[in-house]
Image (cartoon, rainbow, N blue to C red; front, side):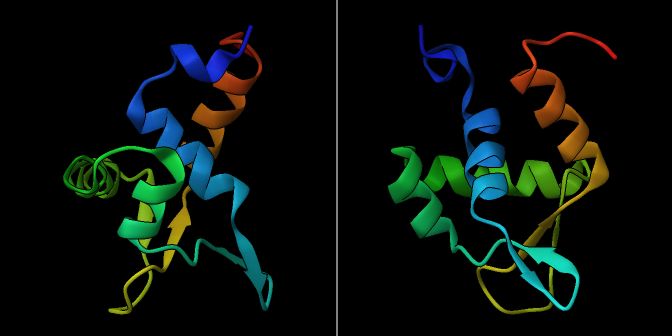
Length: 91
């Protein structure tokens, strides 16, 4: 059974971002625009936009500079993703 079928859009977006991070001088960045994230995940652009805003507001991701399509996942996001990917088991 595919767990992604049962996850919500916030998880899908965070997971998409995590899988596409690149390393620049020892820092992890997600070089995707919101439109690219929408296309990859199949989630409507407006929904992606509001989820990205909520993820930023709740400190799961950080916008890097003023350039579109540069985000970093916080330790908080990585912790949630790890928990979800391990079947929700607490460590």
